[in-house]
Structures are given as structure tokens and as C-alpha cells.
Length: 258
Image 1 (spheres, rainbow, N blue to C red):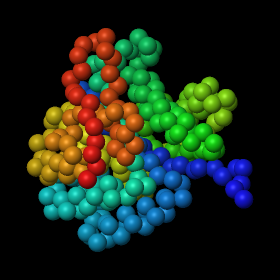
Image 2 (image 1 turned 180 degrees about the vertical axis):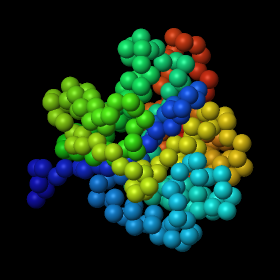
Image 3 (image 1 turned 120 degrees about the horizontal axis):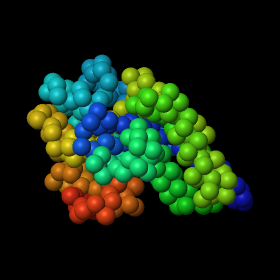
């Protein structure tokens, strides 16, 4: 006999941000897995670092070192070879943000955009499986904000938005700040950084270019300066575009995973 309640689907979303220091674009990345997979991820990632003798954070700003190139390429393949991992990011052109809609404050605009990424993707997951209960635990690297309780604000905003859509439910059970040094899953910064550098068009590192090419190749793309269609599940790039402010500067591409 099949139980009426098949159980709660529990998710872990690990998040990081990029481009908050005055670049043309800023963005947020999120690495998704089921809550039950977090131990598998930590164990397998640790084995990968041990095999390469890598003792640092797996961060995009560390990728300039040619001696660690094979490790970073293996991290890219580690992500793509595991069907239970997904990466979704949001990219915003700073010059397109109407500050008047955010109290004249880029800090508030960024927090809203981060919450928008989370609520949009969570809403898709819940609508895809409407017969299941869902909970989402969100781990974030310290959010660049002068507001000391930025993580709590994201939790409240996300639940308020989702509650209006799904009849009062509060699926985000907690947004918790973690130091990425101690939390490997937050090191999705490698994927986010590669995408953001392609959009910023500023990388002059041969090593970073090779890593970007590996990611693009796994998507069957020539480079990473594009966004994806909304339904892409494995690797999703969402460009926050305002059509009233001019033509799009990138094309939307389909993904054919290798």
C-alpha cells in the first residue's frame, strides 16, 4: 500500500555572491542538493581535495594558480558528473537597477535580488511536486551588507513571498550564515565566479580561462557570456533584464550537457 503522505522533501541550498565591489554586474549563486546528500558531498569533496593535496578554499579568486589547475578542473567535473547537484545563479547589471524602487539603496536592492533568486527557484520546485511537503535550509557566506541581520531578513522576505503563493506555508526553515572556509558546499563560488568573470569580461588569467572553457564545454557552449532558458535544472543562469532600458546584450542559449 502506498502511504498518503510520501514524506517531506528536504533541500539544502548553499549560496554565495559576487561583484559587490563596484563591478558592472553583481550576482548570486546557489548550489542545490537534497538535505540527505550533504554528507555525501562533504565526504566526496574532501577525498577530491586530499587526492590533489589541495589545502585552501575552492574559491574563484584562488584559480589564478596554474599548479592547482587540475584540481579546479576536477571540481568542475565533480559537479557535472553528479546528477543530484544543481547550480542556479542570478546576474544583475548594476546600471539597470532603479534605485528609486529600493529607497535609493543598492544594499537593499541586492538583498531583494538575492531573495528573488531563492523564492523563484523554490517556487518552481514546489510547483513541480505539489503533492509533497518541502523544507529548505539555506546556508550563505556572510552577506555583504551594512545590515547586521541580512540573513534573517532574507528568511523573512522569502517566507512572506512564498506564503502568499502557497497559502501561508513557510518552507524556508532557516537561513544561516556559514564561513565558506568550513563549508565546502558554499564554495559554489567557483562556478559563480567563472560565470561572472565571463560577463564582466575582465579575466586575464590563462588558468581561469581554461576553467571557464571546461564549464562551457560541459554545457556545449563556446563561452559563458549568455543566460539559459528558465526551465534549465542542472545549470541555470538567470539574467535580470529590464526591456524598457534597451536591447539585451546577451543571447539565451539551450544547454546540451556533456
